Amino acid sequence: MDGNGRWAKRRGWQRIRGHEKGADVVRETTETCAQIGIERLTLYAFSAENWKRPEREIAFLMRLLKKFLVAERPTITKNNIRFTAIGRLELLPEDVKSDLRETIAMSASNTGMVLCLALSYGGRAEIIDAVRRIAHDASRGALNPGTLTEDSFRAYLYDPGMPDPDLLIRTGGDVRVSNFLLWQISYTEIWVTPVQWPEFTTEHLHVAFRDYASRERRFGDIRE
Image 1 (cartoon, rainbow, N blue to C red):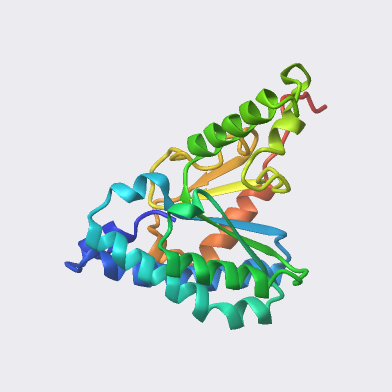
Image 2: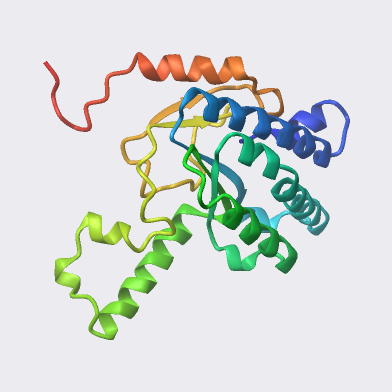
């Protein structure tokens, strides 16, 4: 969900105004996806690299996240959404972690779309953390490295049950994946738009879905 800061700067505003508007777009996008039957939506909300930003901006983003986790509980309940999160969550402030755990718990029995926030997340970090857990299990004799497969490796990722994404939507115009779900997106279709996240609408979302539906996915195979 890229472009919040640039969107605000273009208008002569502080970057935090872009993040506030972006949070509104998150709500609209989430509700739309839940209502049309999307099974899982993962939003790259705060990357591992975002910790390098100015302290003031980080503090604001954490306050905004805390507000979102509480304010969106009625939306989550109304749409039967199961909420979850991935990343190095231990690095988040204690009050944010508390609200995060509560929102996850209150939605755990919901059976609709899974909404996953990637927080303090990096694709390389996820793979490194998985390798560390594999090495730990191997060192104590709980794992034979020679039997490791792609499926058994997946069990060490942050969310082993996460299916590989069908579609990756990148707003803001940058044609790169920016360390997002590096293991999982090997065969994911990518749709890039120059539209910055605060201006991303339901219509843009449907354009992305229509474009995805027109593609032929071969997964390395040959289709006659």
